[in-house]
Image (cartoon, rainbow, N blue to C red):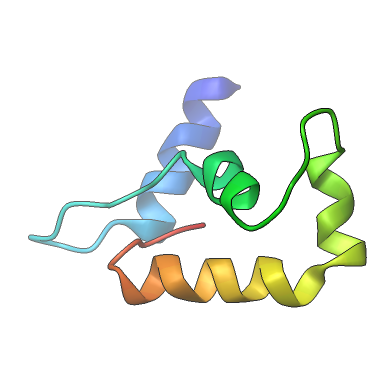
Length: 67
């Protein structure tokens, strides 16, 4: 099952001749944007959605293929 999902992910996002760029530092960026220790980062998707959208936009502008 996990391999099947990985293959579907690669097929959907892979671009011939271009490496796929991903980033795993969203939590760090949220902390820099004001997320407090112990605060639920997932709630920012609802309560601070503009900040989440802006962060995603910046990742895409920097060259990420998926956020």
